[in-house]
Length: 348
View 1: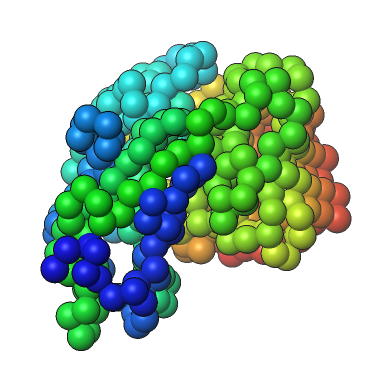
View 2 (view 1 turned 45 degrees about the vertical axis):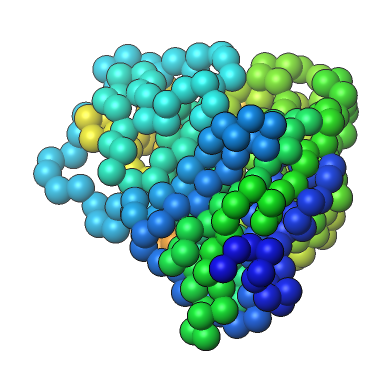
């Protein structure tokens, strides 16, 4: 069965033949009943202009480790970690490329570059909640002023009644991105999960902000549930402002097991050590970061920070942080006010 013959009750976002889509969009399928996520098959995104394969998600690859590594603890980095400038993305760098003194990250699991951290993060390529399946393309691969088509192999997502057999061909699910990004000197960027803002994701917005640029930028986040790992480095004077503290929720299931330190280097709370990848929201080597009026949650247990900030002159105001061990980890001077921190163990 081709995509055009699928029941109309399977809704797609972006809608088929949608225009003006943000390149950081998620791909969402909403079914009439809860789908089952398979353990094989692929999701592919093609450039419609030339049929170039832009991205592949292979569900036979596990999302990430389910158990911690055995053996003696690794030493700390022999030299201070260097935060190199440059825009390193999945488009120009192989995820797993080591930084600092780390060894390459194993490619036995799903891997994507987030926020220029080339060592990469493990991630879930598809997340299902009730009747909704959200597909997470590798970050920063879709571009402005392009038309794409999506294919979903049979078995990736199935319904009990057999009513969905994937998306095939070049015309079943297409969409076109916006012609151009916001102006480079924008002082305010809007994030909205429904595509009505400048970006669909928090990560897409912070990626747009140049490194080490002292011009103040406010990222206004509209109400919504943003299930994503947020990681950035080398940012200055950026405000993340939520529309409503309880209704703007940035969250993910992440911890030291799922995204561990390199096999040859440990991390700790001191500047200069290898950066952690285990929190839901991470601001690394950044100053003048203001987090205001939102909630940040890590839904994993163990060493699983909700928020991790490393830098100076940072502010956390009217924020709810939920995590497990060290729910809030702050490495450097920070002002915290009117905020709620919930976690296990030592919490902070």
